[in-house]
Length: 106
Image (cartoon, rainbow, N blue to C red; front, side, top):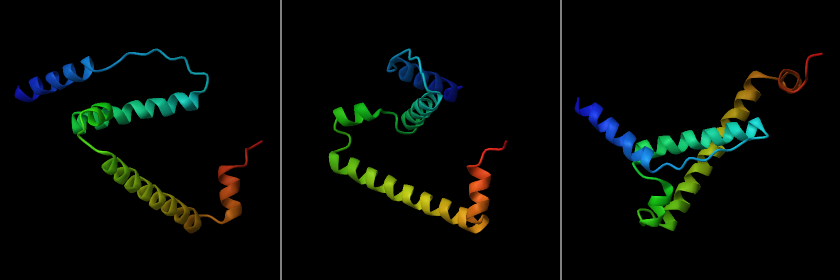
């Protein structure tokens, strides 16, 4: 019961801080990216209990910490790129990869 009350309290606080905006997308790719940003924001809010805006305006995190976070995320991205490249190299010859992923079937 206590967990349910806490969950309702969190949802209420989270909902009160939300702004509703209606957007018409001309590009479904952009729409999917925006959906991912919203989902990512929800995950972050649930994990940390604050928004990036609140974090910045209440000085919970300073510029150097933001720069450190960016650096770490970009380092992770480079590792993911390298891993994906190795996956391609280990499992495909270049012509097979191009044929499988870029050539359209007629």
